[in-house]
Length: 191
Image 1 (cartoon, rainbow, N blue to C red):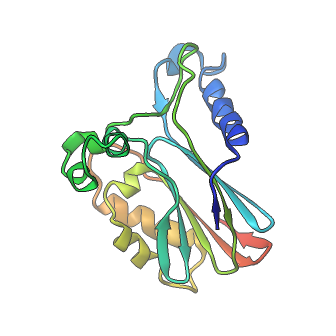
Image 2: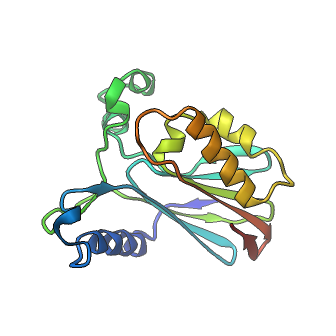
């Protein structure tokens, strides 16, 4: 069951991160830099998800991999606005990866598009947070294949994802993966 919402809480989280990027500790070194965000909070039987940009949260449940978040790219925005089809977006070149929304280190830029949702958590779920350095080079089918080993620890699964993405690395984008495995209805393990 997906409930899209809790936007006020998610917005506060994203804005807090953005303010820290522009804090006096960061100084002018970060001015104008952009960051994406994929965050997950497990609380009892629910997962709160928030993302900005093209870092993603996935759910691997009963052998099926589902992308929970929506990428905030120019191509996806054009699909949502009806300007191009999803098939055209796949061949849109750099539009597929150019961000339509991100957290920007700036005192003046506070608007960003954000995805937030609340999902039910089930025993056996695996939740995955990935940066676009991984999702840009690994297909959903490849990710699902890397998650098939039910006995592997979350740390091992995350390492496998990072190593597979590094083998195909294009450019200098960062590659990050976090895997959380739900062991029972109200417990989980993480690296």
